[in-house]
Length: 52
Image (cartoon, rainbow, N blue to C red; front, top):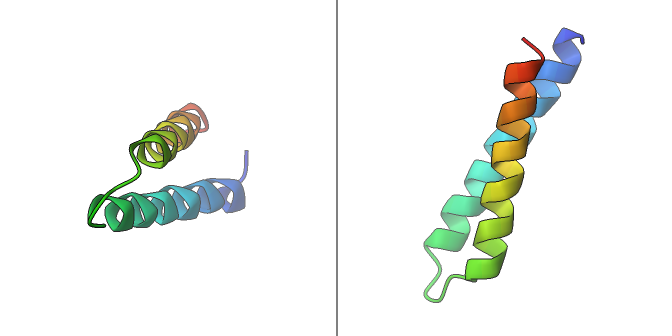
């Protein structure tokens, strides 16, 4: 896979990290949403490692 695809995955991973941080710092974090975001971030990380 190309560099553009790897870069896109990295941007998605970073955006998910930002969303996770924002959700974590809310007064009452939505645990279901937080879990889904973390699961998606992990999926993208695994895909990033697989494309190396």
